[in-house]
Image (cartoon, rainbow, N blue to C red; front, side):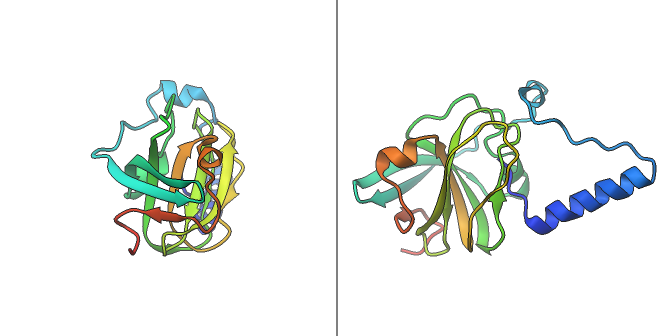
Length: 172
């Protein structure tokens, strides 16, 4: 699931309008599994890194892929066919970021999308995001990172806004 800042979305729309006005053909790939058949996904990002979440139900440990380059964040979990309960993907923006929204373009599995503040606390959660849905799912405030988990996992562990995420990118 790629992160697309609002300003970038506007620029892309403006560019598409300019190209269309100039007579150029422009068509964004349709959100479907067909893009995945053409190899649009990415291999598992290694090495996996430890991450834990502390909720009212206890501490839960995960092994996460770290998507910290623009290309890795753009492709994210696209075209994956499954995600184990103890795995996830952490999108590290490197610094506090505003106006973040995720979508599910070419993402074949439902996901819980956890928006994490710069202090490592959960800001908000988009629960069970629908596969292939391009509706923007906004963070609702300033974040440092986003954690994607298998859909329903956040509810299973009792994850709520304010809960603590422990990973090397967050202050202890």
